[in-house]
Length: 151
Length: 151
DNA sequence: TGACAAAAGTTAGATGTCTAACTATAATGT
DNA sequence: ACATTATAGTTAGACATCTAACTTTTGTCA
Image 1 (cartoon, rainbow over the protein chains, first blue to last red):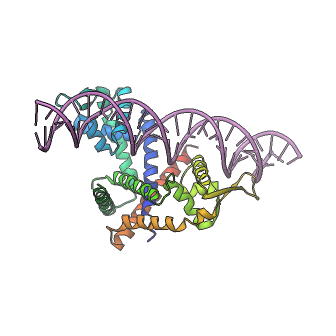
Image 2 (spheres, rainbow over the protein chains, first blue to last red):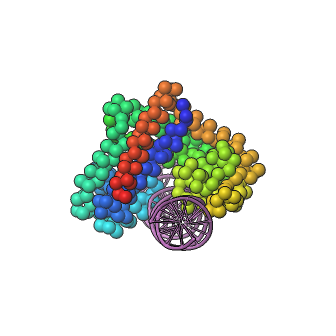
């Protein structure tokens, strides 16, 4: 055992992010980065969402999500509106142009999955997901335990 | 299969990096980030190295490595010198103070491994490394093939 | 041998992300 | 009912990293 799993995951993460950026540029979406894709992914599923929901889904902070949505609004893929239930809340919704990109994003996502899983058999793919889930759950539990202790 | 391995690796990467930053601060090394640790790791092994070697080892670009070494030099952990063989080359070496931190870095690195591998059995740890290596090799091969094609 | 290409390193500028601090609104508890 | 606390979102400022362009030195080859 080399105990280099963290380094390997870091490298894989770097390479996939970089590849994704290239794909987005190739799809004519320059200025759009993978995190914007995460924001859009939730909107493709739900049609609309609050900033808070988008931040949680994309695993970014709320300030970062503000910037991401600013950009998406600027290029016309998304529209902000005040929530009617809660005056603090902003509801973000896809524009027609944003909705029209669903297919392109789905295609890129499919290509990414293929790229990562292709060297693995079905069993290996399942095993990898199982192991990664174990590691992630444990990290999150450890983090929560430490946060709780420090409060 | 959920095909979410990329997301899981991204999350694990984020959490480990963040945890590492906290550990470095706790060790009195504020201003030092994980990438500085990668640079130092090679110096702990080899005593000295060129900027080029450090960049390759840390998987960072050379401009980034320049900034990393600037910082390490500024806080006195490292020293630059002109290579005698090649006037273009800079040789970076640990100072006495830098060398004295070897133990602290080793301890943090050990803690990280424990944190990530603890939910896994020995077999699972080995399996995870094997699968990650398969994925990474494939990604690198794909990238090289694409680069070659575009030249 | 002399021109041109490659390599080492740095500088400059851009970008994505974060934390801290702020505003505005809603919820809570006494 | 009102003061306090919590939540939604934004703004401001910092930082790690990248790409592109530049300087200097070395290697190559006609």
